[in-house]
Structures are given as structure tokens and as C-alpha cells.
Image (tube, rainbow, N blue to C red):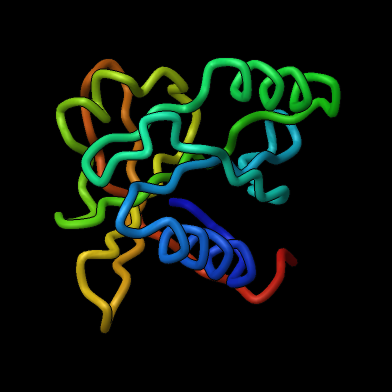
Length: 138
């Protein structure tokens, strides 16, 4: 189960809406070993595409190095789907390389609602998990 603050959900949704019609992407870092998302890190979609996302390799290098320096891990890796449901594509699954991360997908296909779903992706196997949104971490 992913437990995440309302503030972080709102930031992920806002980033996804702002980048629409292109896919948005980023990470939420948290203390290493904690499974607690805390620091929102929006990233650039190097593809600038409505159907595909890719972290810029230099930006990803800097972000991951910064997390290492802060003793953090990528607790959440998120991106949006602009025309399809919030479910990992074959490409998303093939690129999932952080077995401990929660892979969050947001769909901006509808203007009325923004589905927010989380998955674990390990060795090509996708497992949807419950998302618990909290006002603060207790």
C-alpha cells in the first residue's frame, strides 16, 4: 500500500495537468528505507510527447545523486497518461528499474476527473496497490 500526503497528490496532479497534452513525470523522494514519500521532484519529459515519457539522462543523474547525498530513495516514480487509463503500458513496464518504488500513474484524459493509481512493478510483473491519502504522516 502507498501512503501519501494529500499535498503530494495535489502536486503530482497539478504537474500532470500543467504538462498536458504531454506526459508529465517525476519522483517523490523519501528517507532511504522509510517507504515514506516526502520531497516532490518534478522532472522534465525529455520526449515532450503525449504518448511517452523519458527522464532526461543528465537530470536523472543529478536527481539520483542528490537523493544519495540526502540519504533518500525514489519512493514514488510518477508519470501521466494523457489519453489512456492510469495503467502501466508495456514500455512503462520495460523501463521500471526500481523494485522498491511505487509507480504512480495519473490520467489526464478526462477534464472532470484525474484517476490516481499506484503499482509495484518487479521483474515485469505489475501489481496494483491501494493508495491511502493522508492529511499528514502521523
